[in-house]
Length: 438
Ligand SMILES: Cc1cc2nc3c(=O)[nH]c(=O)nc-3n(C[C@H](O)[C@H](O)[C@H](O)COP(=O)(O)OP(=O)(O)OC[C@H]3O[C@@H](n4cnc5c(N)ncnc54)[C@H](O)[C@@H]3O)c2cc1C
Image (cartoon, rainbow, N blue to C red; front, side, top):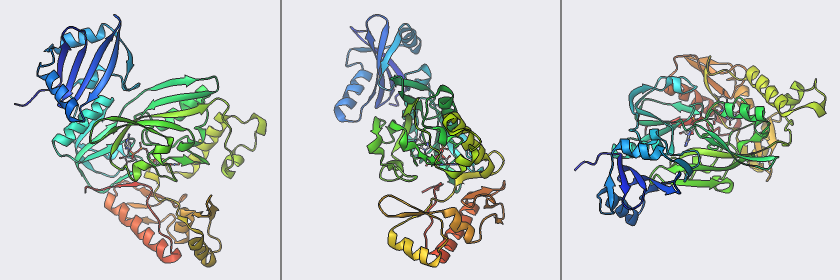
């Protein structure tokens, strides 16, 4: 017999309520005094918990079925004190049937603006909706693609499975000692809006990362960075839902294994998690980061002791607007390639043949080369080919003049990679995530 979800039940003898969302998922409302609920999300990942949930469903655990109306009448009679996930508090919407759309055009949901249809699409607004989407994908064997703001992906073709767009909103200050704050933010919030809000409030530390497109949830994925600051400098922890089990897990800083445009979520744990919220450590008295020459020249008219975090964020925005194409006008995903990192031996080889190569020494003895310089020297800066090309102000950025396909952009990228390898013996790696149906 096919079970219908959600089911609503009440445990007899207590006032506990259960919304059973599927064979393995339930949300429990446990009464706390006469006015509050304690809310727990249960995922039956092992056999005993599965049996418990099955018994609850089948009335063997002294629970009785109640209607959705009665359930919500009772839920709304009290307030929620604490939930197992602070921002993803249970909401009525969380257990409504997931909204699934079919054959959705992804072009407006990505900054490259290439045409690509997804067979099934859903926007999730809570942890519960993430779990429902995971279940729907698993039950129908749909391959799953997670999307935030779509500013770091190149879609090579139509997506035959399901896209889950992260839409969990919200921001909460968990701790504030007068200087340091712990701020937790929903993964579906806009990154740039977070930076602007933090600057406005005087919660400092993110100002150098202004105007980076995309969502908060994707920011740890590649440890976004700009103008001497990376997300890892302000990251405290994140919570993510396991794509296989639906369980919520907290990753601290060490567990994320951050590197240059890298994290564990692009390596060992790739495609295993949906990030639902991220916590940052911000400071009212955070130091200013103005090592970059471009920031210094933007702010040279100000007396150094008067420069504020807001001045730095505004300088960063002016610099970025002057150098980078606006995706609303010209499709792109920012830097298409990473700056290559070479060990000392490989670097000396490049340097002996190309003494002008732009490079930066790194801790541990290796060297980072400026990929933009390599691409420019190889003759690609400003070149247009068909519907796509290399930006004329920044050779790291590939652009879509409007009608390019993912294949066309990727062919351009691979030709650049081949040329740079032939001329410099250096292998460029894409920074942008290449989305292909496996
Ligand atoms: C004009 C421009 C300038 C840019 N400048 C910079 C820059 O200075 N520095 C920099 O680091 N980056 C830069 N980027 C790249 C991009 O903005 C960042 O990588 C951003 O963090 C991507 O966020 P997004 O929400 O758009 O991610 P998406 O493009 O939607 O997704 C990126 C990857 O993360 C995965 N993902 C997204 N959200 C989640 C989630 N919640 N849980 C699990 N997986 C998820 C996706 O599956 C995909 O693999 C720039 C891009 C553009 C267009």
